[in-house]
Length: 353
Image (cartoon, rainbow, N blue to C red; front, top):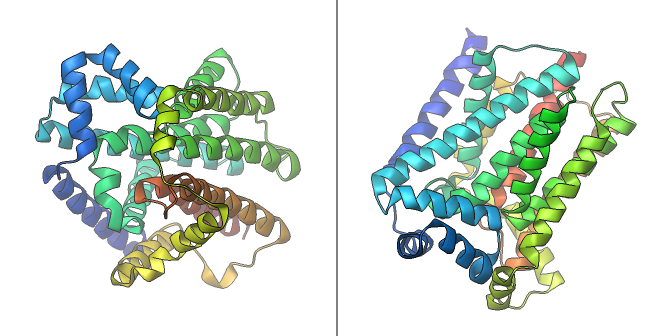
């Protein structure tokens, strides 16, 4: 009875709550100047010219602008279409987490899981992530332009690492990795840079701790190269220079302070502490956490600290560029990595014992 409660009852309630909030927000769209701007220019200029104008004059991010121009050609400022679109992006996120979960268990533990189990994990994961970022749910989940850049960059990163950790080689996989990496570099710059760092971290993880895995080291380095090359296209664009010139002056000490502030926000936003803790503990019980047996080894500490360092860099770069604390849309990449790290740590302890 207790197992069913933690494996099915509470997770189902969490997912149901997530879907209720998500679709309520999606169907009660709050007008946004970015979406209005994109809709107007795409309507007036067409897909190709609008994408070129966004890239050259707004903020770079070549792949984001291609997706945005195409999507607003179809959406045409119809709020029902907006709701359908952001729901489609959310479902794509669920699919990406499902594949990552399946490939992770297959590669690291030789455990084959069913499609139904992997999807169930992905839905609970997504619900937990949603409530951890509950305060900024509108700008993360219901803002079309944000979904086309910040959320999509996270989704493609998950797909990329799903491919990188799969023990297979071939032309098709290399093509997929190169395509995903190039697209990631053309979206959120900070997420792209940290994704490249995580790819290098995956190489180090295999080399020093999992040499028995048959991951393709060359493919991992190719992914990092394509991300950074694509990112360079963004950074040297006129749009990126225009955006950076419009931002306030930033300093390293202030950025460090804002990074610490961002990490502390979940506690400082005291009205939502209970909600966040509930979601987090439901997730931890759902993945089978044995709290009495969580004794980290030296290897565990090194891996966890390395991942936390990448997350800290992700937050710091946002703070440094924006000269402010990280907006919720900028936290998604870091929180996704953090949540999956918790699962990986718990699953390793559970399986090894």
